[in-house]
Length: 255
Length: 216
Ligand SMILES: Nc1ncnc2c1ncn2[C@@H]1O[C@H](COP(=O)(O)OP(=O)(O)O)[C@@H](O)[C@H]1O
Ligand SMILES: [Mg+2]
Image 1 (spheres, chains in turn yellow, purple):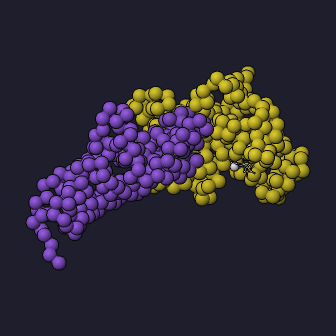
Image 2 (image 1 turned 90 degrees about the vertical axis):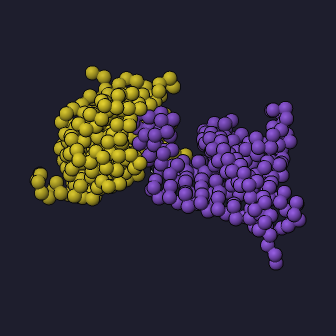
Image 3 (image 1 turned 180 degrees about the vertical axis):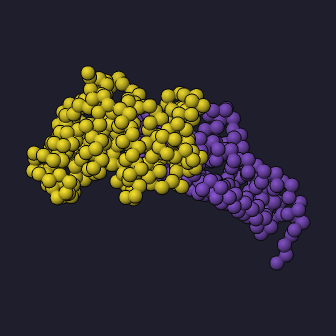
């Protein structure tokens, strides 16, 4: 089967600073790929290249076999199929929650308002926020805002969902509610690429884990391989510095 | 000092008619100026040099030269060129619109550029085109932020419209000048004109405060 996402020799730089170096990746249908790595390693830039919020300098990205580099494609058509959830939510503050969710299906997909609203109501129920349909985003907690942002992305019925540290801006007690929604999505078979520092979540939900550092995919494998038997020194030191690896050594998984 | 109320009363109907014209000219000019300003403001943000450059030139010209000169050029140059003859009220509206477009263009540009990149990126990542993102996400928020600067521009425009008396558009100053000439008086016509301008601009600023609070 063809991959949903195929990245070949991707290069990206800002001015003279090279941020992504020869990245290669295939993500298959219904796969959940988790990217971990230190801050500044290019994880966000990589995700943003996948829907052309950043323009790469070299290489190829194929979404369902369609090259994003083809000058004849309409970028907005590709983006409509690829949902992106931001660390900072980026909800539209001048619109009620329900309108945040329906605006794109109505304007981009040209759905009738009724259809868009019933889809939105269904998604709000799914993320546990049915009672918030008619409030404005500034009255939501961080965890609620992020769940609305996920619902907003899902309303377009995307084939792929990208998450850029969706819980990093949240108070610790709200992380769980967002991760729970993402777990449900994974169970339903959504194809996802997730940048996160939540190692337990990565281990539980990820089919594959990528360790990225300084613009390179240093190591790639199943959660077991990466978390329990990392090969590269840099992976090991990253995991231990985040306490994840140390924790594993101490407690639950004695060697 | 004697103060002749009788000559004010004498001129009152004319000056009130003039005030209506001042309001009319100002309103039309701010509307036309804003529409043109929106186009020019977006043009100035274009990624294409060929679009950006003329817009910058326009803004620099109208902000960098006296409105007085612009009014004369429009009245004696531009309008006759287009209509074959000139008309003071038309010339007044066109000159003030062209001038205020340069200022509103900068207000629009600053308002739009003050929006966080995240809003535009969120709109794009939902598949919106640039036009849709502007129309539904960026402009509605940016316009709210622009209201104070925009209101200020409107107030300046009302005051600056007094300059069109020089091309004999019969607004407040035209009649005040007439009154001054007819009776050889200074204080009555100009204090009374000031009072009317003040009432207009003061009500306008109050109105804008209310609007701002309602939209906040
Ligand atoms: N728009 C930009 N302009 C210039 N440099 C950028 C820009 N975005 C990111 N960078 C730089 O690229 C590098 C990778 O950033 P990023 O992809 O945000 O890393 P991560 O998400 O892994 O923390 C950093 O050094 C960052 O400073
Ligand atoms: Mg990042």
